[in-house]
Image (cartoon, rainbow, N blue to C red; front, side, top):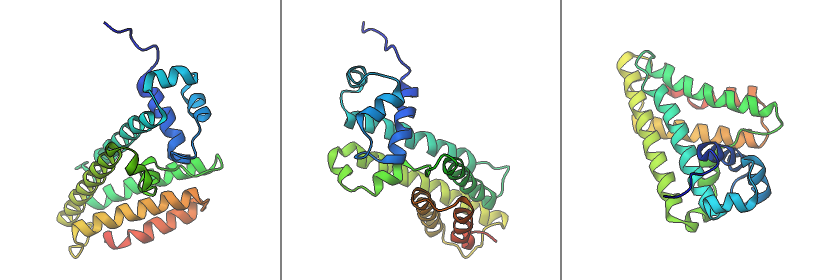
Length: 200
């Protein structure tokens, strides 16, 4: 029987994901990861074998965690379809506003990874995580849009698959512009202008 790990693996993955989501894979140093995890380099890599493996596990944890958070909102039948879309956008905007107060954008590990094509070549698991996450989020958004069309809060003219892709594109753009330093008020205006066609 192996010895139990003397650290909280989930807490470590959340901590290093917080670094990767702001700085990306290449610009996140081992020193940053060790500091975030509260572990020495040897202990960190004994547990996760390499920076690449740590990144993959953190990406899986990050994508799953935030997709489940969005799923909870997007499948909430106590809200109209439009309210579900607005709530998800507000969660993202609140993250960006909080991060802006600390001098940087909130970042997104998934967006960073999608914008760095070379990452997909490092390990096939990265592509699998990203592709699965995108498909699942699009499915959730399509479901919310259809619910909105049924309750009258989303225009019947919206094609659900196109509306879902528009929403993802706008949120990814908000993450990118947040990293570029755009003020929260401007992010909010841009975000809701971007999804205006999805709302009645």
